[in-house]
Image (cartoon, rainbow, N blue to C red):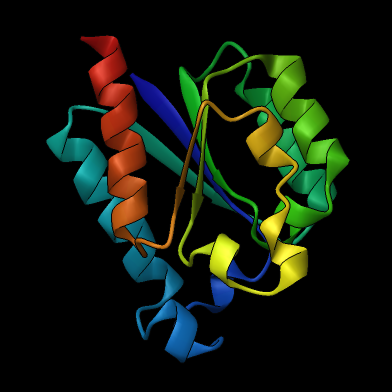
Length: 143
């Protein structure tokens, strides 16, 4: 099983950006955590990060026929990007939305997610662990 893990805008700033919300571990630590978690579940995870909405859309489009599912944390694009939603719908791959923080407990504008209109599961507020749970969701689906 191959899973594409997409991290969007500002995720590359983990460890620097608002550590009281996102913690002190950097993006490389997140990628290592995802890869270790995937390996333990016998899943191949491919991580992609971009601060550019169009690049995220293109990566989703390229996933068709190459991946069995998508885990996505689009960052702030979660709340603004109909284009990312449309790309997910177009490729039709099973999708799990992940957020490091609990977006329902944050600013009002963060409480709406376009991605959740398509995602089959949403995991919020569990930090890095959310990615492990998302991978576990796919692992349970393959059994």
